[in-house]
Every structure is written in structure tokens, then in C-alpha cells.
Length: 639
Image (cartoon, rainbow, N blue to C red; front, side, top):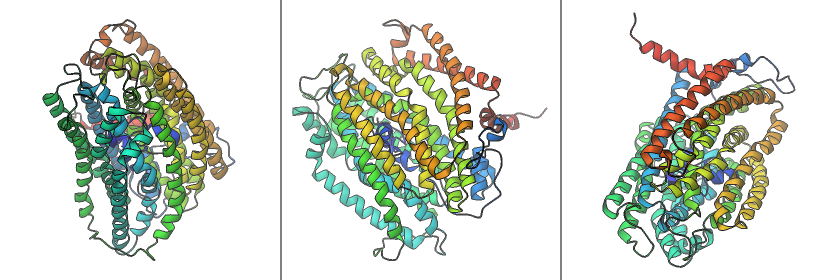
């Protein structure tokens, strides 16, 4: 899992988003311990400029507090672009373009991240190096998110947005904020580098030569903390000024650089299949190619944002002296948010130690082992978090604007409406994604296996367990956005404490299992926390908002589930045609074979799902498909 995809978890996904974060990232729950990318997490909180209110649209409006949630389903559909435009004063087409551009950018990044994961598997899968690199690669995300990620994610955007209303467009405030942020990040990164050895020893179960190599990897990877922070700061400035594209597309450059570095590694050092990479034969040159280029990708990702920020015309420059700038108000909210992140991520240290137990000692299993390690957990997390990063994160980013505007105007009805629309539209995609990941876990696992069937099966089992909790993760993320839209960081902190207790208990229980089941036990602990998270958040949120259309949301999700289950049965039957049920079957034979099976079975499942939704007259499917079909018709030559 690459750093830029993680939001804050043992597994470290890739692409932009993992990394990040949410995450998470990036929400801040223990499930976030399984997200994927700081920047992803940072992208979850968009512009909240308070623009003149516009008459709210009935479509997509959830019942007001105390009202009935049994109104006709057709009235509840609502287009997210319309919701956002109604709250921000922007036209529907403008809001739609912003959301579409972010979704496409994130999708492009995820596709490249997918390719990066495949190439990384070819380079080091089924070797001792794979688990050591994964354990080290988690730390930059963990430390950044624990100390600064939550503040950047949920606090700075509202403050930057308010400052942008000033005559100078917020130039003075943002200059001082960036100066403070950069100095803080430099200090944090320097301290972490000095303490790399004890931090690595504390956060992993590696010993002996494996720990020594993990520390060396850490020295190459930990500078990413500064550049993650810089990326987040610059991205929040862009988002606050309604500029989303560069922030969404920058991780694409990151992945291009990282993939190039891995290809060089394979060309020079050989693949895991041809050259058994071990701790004893590992060289500093290989470390430069593997870890050095990973960090270089994050550096470039941050640097490309300097151009669009400069084009804002804010005339930013280093400025000191922060009294009377309004940063005090920011700090008050930041205290709760940072506390939330610290609580959640400290627990991640325990998860990391548990996840590295199977491969920690010098006598740990090596190539061909049936015992999965953190490599399998990270790859599975990278896969299961992908629907959230592409769909829920993009929707949350666009809809956060509407929710923040409604909260600022004390319009709880509009806030409930935006929240309900976001949950229903997201659910249509994430419910299907969960069933698809469960059914297609085998070919997905083989993609990241480096052509080792035992590794592919380990990833598949882990992914199957994680997939169950995928829709709940996205639901909890969006529910938390409703709290942050009201600048309420206290409730998420309390929720986080509750979920951490549950997650810690389940993770420690996994450590008691035999080594061959530890990773699967951790995956189950993630799923348990994912499922319970939105339940706890719902009770807190309902106390603040009242009825936000729970019955309507539940009925929509039940329809999604029925359609997804039918598609899942069809998908499983399709897999049987490709030898999924037998060892050495076509599906397990190679990465290209797995990709072919995935394309065929995945397409069949998607078609069946859409057809069933249409038969069930699910309004949300039309809200998403009609704009796409309209564009296709408009491009067709006139008769």
C-alpha cells in the first residue's frame, strides 16, 4: 500500500489518496486504521464559503426533525449536483463538473495506484522484504495523521473559507497559517527522524536484522510527513477557493513517479519470482530504488500544487506573528480534532505490532508460506477502501459545502436533506462494491500476488472479511462530515474513544490467535468496528439533528442489497467457469488470467446490478445514469 493512498491504517494503500487519508483517510475512527491515504482524507473536506442562501430544492430533502420519513421514494432522490448548487449558489452544471472532475481525478489516481500495487507485488511479494517495507511504509501516514492530519482535514477549511471573504481574499491569514504550518511540519519531521529507531521498535514486532532494515526504510520514508502536510495545506487553500481539480489530480503524478521507480527496481534488481530478495542480500541501492522513489512521488505531488496556488493571486509570503488573526478560534476546534486523531492512531500502533507478529522474528516464515503477513492485510485494505475513496470521498467533498452552508445558516432541514442525499447516493455504489469485492476477492488477490498463488489466496481471504464492512465505513465517514460541517469536533472525539475501545479489544484478541490466523483476526476486528461505527454516530447525530430520513435511507439500502446479492450469485457462477473452485485453476494461474476473469465477471455483475435496480425502480440509479446517458446522446450525430 502506498503512502499517498493511506488515510491511517495498518494497510497502506496507494494513490491519492490512500494515503490519505483519510482519511483516512479520512475519517478518524478506528476503521480509519484501515483507510488509505492522507490526501484522500484531506480531500474529504471541501470549501465552506458562506454564500447567499438559495431556495432549497424539495427533491432529495429528508424529512424535517420529528416529521415522517415515509414520503414517496421519488421525492427523495435528488441530484447531488443540485444539492450542492442549491446550497452554494453555484449552478448545477458547475457543481456537477467539480464533483465529476474530482471523481475522475481520484479514479485515475486509483487506477495508477492499482497498477503500482501490481508492480510492487511483482517486485517484492512473497519475500521477507515485502512485510518489512509495508511495516515501515505505514509510519509516515500514521504520524502525520496523528499529529496534524485531523486538524488539516476538518478544521482549516472553514477558517480559510471565512478568511477568503476578507478584502484581501484571505492573503494575510493564509500567509500566516502556511508559515505556521510549514514550520510545525519541519519540526515534527525532524523530531521523528531523530527518533526513527525507537519509533520503529515500538510500532512493529520486527527484531534483529529485520528491525535494522525497517529503520533504514524509515529514514527514507519518514520525510514524507512534511510533504504530506504541505500537500494538505496547499490543497485546503485551493479547495477553499473553489479549485478542486489540481488537488484531485496531483496524486496521479505521485503514482507515475512511484511506478517508474518500481520498474527500475525490477529491471536492475529482478522480480520476486526470479530473484529471492532477503534481508541478507538486500543493498542500499535497492533501498534507494524502492523507498527513495516512493518518497520522491510524494515530493512531486506536493510541488505541483504550488502552480495553481500561485495562480490564485493571493501574493502569499512568509509572515510571522499570529495574535489577532483568528487562529485562536481555529485552535479551539483543533484541540478536539487532534485529540480524536491521536486517540485513534495511538491504537494503530498496537494494530501495527499485532500485524507484524507473523513476520517479525528472524525465524518467521519466508517465501511460499501459508501464513499471511502485513503485506496481505495492506493489499486487501487497499482494495476494500477503493470504493470509498473514489465514490464516498468525492461525494462527501462536494456535499460538505452544502452541509457547512446549511449549518452556518442554522438551516437544519437543509443539512438533513444534504446528508440524506449523500448517504443514499453513496450507498448505491458501496453496497454493490462490497458484494463485488466479496465475490471477486480471488482474482483481486491474484493481481497483487506477484504470480504467487498462496499470496493471492491470503489476500482474497482477508479481502472477503473486510468487504463486509465497506458500506458501513463510508456511512460513518459521511455522518462524521455532518458533525464537522457544524464545527463540532467534540462529538467525533467521544465517538472515537468508544470505537477505539472496541477496536483495541478486538485487535488484541486477534493477537492471541495462532500466527496463521492473526491477519484474518485483524481484518475481522476492522469489520466489527466498521459495522458498529455508524450505529454509534447515528445516535449522537440524531440527538443533534433529529430525524434525517433514516427510514428512507434504510429502504434505499435494502433495495441496493437485494440487487447486489442477485448480481453476486451471477458473479460466483461466472467465476466457476474460470476454475475458481480448484487449486491451479485458470483464475489462479497468473496475473493476466486474474485480470481477464475480473473484467468478465465484474462487467457481468455490474450489468445485472443496474438491471435489477431499474426493475426495482430505484430513483438514485436514474439520478446518476441520466446525466451520463444524456451526454452520450448529445455526442451522437444527428439524424
